[in-house]
Image (cartoon, rainbow, N blue to C red; front, side, top):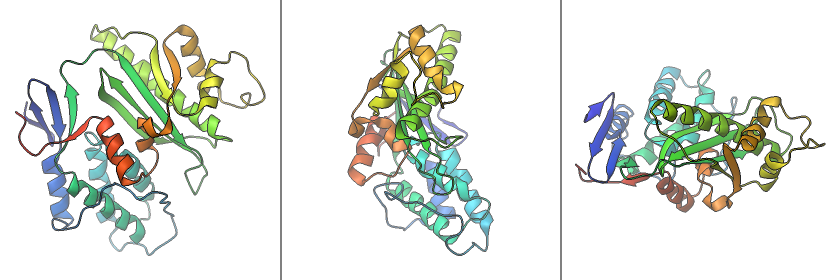
Length: 286
């Protein structure tokens, strides 16, 4: 297979490379941005868009079409996951600031048009996961944003940016809910691999940069700080006791899932993009 549903596939001795280069070029052409300048990150740091600031777009379908295409592009570009999630909240009544920031993403894509998602052929079958949360990120609802990414043998196989369903009262609670989302996905990936007759070594490390959240998961007793949490969040603790996973602390600058929950400055964004397994290749690797 070389090309399927807009996804280009290249193979060599090292592994498999996936990209949507032609799809990105089509977006640039449709947006009439072939000659635009490039930017080193997909979204400015600290950006918080509003539903009522700015002039309404005369043709909202133009914005909706662009966001729909970015959502599909996210299949091979996890580095734009946060940006697409943030911009997709304004599909009902898109405004000019929303379109301007969507165009910022397109400018970033132009500078990274040759980015490819790499899957190593000689990777082991061990699984690792990273989860992160940005407390109270939504300016409208004060809900937090969760992000996770799951690796199999060092290759990224699952990732997601998602707004939490309820408001978290603390950073630890927001991080703990993010751990719950990641755990559910880990269980699903593990069950899929079992169907393929592949056994994943246990326990699976789940990396979180919040020590309080990892302590809550490891503490078998309820106390004042955790009694208000929903039952589904304690799913993490159950899987820990079963030996399915083990929470581990990771420094914030090495938290790969950080790119899923917030806009980062150029150097850190580039660093985490490489950690996701995205490589820049200009020549045909096959």
